[in-house]
Image (cartoon, rainbow, N blue to C red):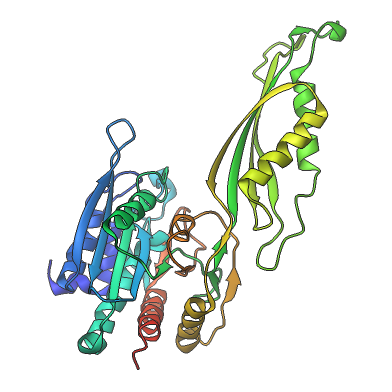
Amino acid sequence: MNDALLDLSALTAALIRRASVTPKDEGALEVVAAALEQLGFTCHRLAFGSADSQIIHNLYARRGTGRPNLCFAGHTDVVPAGAAEAWSFDPFAATLRDGVLCGRGAVDMKGAIAAFITAVREFLDRHGPSFSGSISLLITGDEEGAAVNGTRKVLEWLDKRGERLDACLVGEPTSAQLLGDMIKIGRRGSMTGRLTIHGTQGHTAYPHRADNAAHRLVAMLHALTTAELDCGSEHFEPSTLQVSTIDIANPASNVIPASAHAVFNIRFNDCWTSEGLKDWLAERLDAVGGRYTLDITVSGEAFLRAPVGLSDRLIEAIRRVTGRTPELSTTGGTSDARFIQAYCPVVEFGLVGLTMHQVDERVEITDLAGLTEIYRTFLALFFDQP
């Protein structure tokens, strides 16, 4: 790789051209590793999983051995592009149009990875001789997928090595409308419930001889959707429960169904733990009566994990570059910060997310340059470099 690839837009484009639709890597992590090795990073290529669970490629890179160790976390995997004809350009060609770089992953989040690498290069050019801490990057190929063999496995690997992260900046596209208008200092938890009602099949003309699973399902969902979970907390909006599917699979209009199914998702704030929500669900479902099974999966607990020292440095960096004071938010979906927060303080900040996961995903080069300058300023503030 030549020095030109370390150029911000060129590096972003090189990453976009790797069609790393989760869980495929397609060489994206090698692009990252090659750029970092030119900057003196030691790169560890880590693969976790099996043929059955799917092998996921990850990268951990570090420059320096001192403390503190500031880590940048991100992902090179992207969501599918969908129908190519729906796009105005090839989603993996990294098309540059009128100062806008177009392609899948431009915003979420290959642009942020390129911006951070470029910021590190500029930071080391200015402060390399006096810099005594460590900068690391944890880049996974499994954030948009199952998130099983990605960031959390790398964190476990680091823990076994006795290697500590002192703080982490996650480059998710947190900006809402303008670069720097929002950072994430925590995230809501996410719980999915798969509810199955067990009734007794019968003829619709003789309902007294049956137990209508559809009726019980409606009653149970009513009990869940009309109950207020909470009113929110200091840093979180109210928790919500949304029904995503209802399935009775009964083709006959004169048959009372014996079973009925629904899937719902709860996004919960720091008023709750998943265990507390399980008790809350059981209480309301049991009150309706009837036989049911409820299978629950939890992809992450609610957390608030950005101490003042970390978030204040990021806020100051954003102010210096953009003149904006960002909103401190916990909205949105989950991110790999839910795993990192168990190991060190974490804050999230990246590009404007208006086009992420959409057709014609794109980023303005001026935003990429602005994000790079914010990251460089943040590095200087974090390591107390004048």
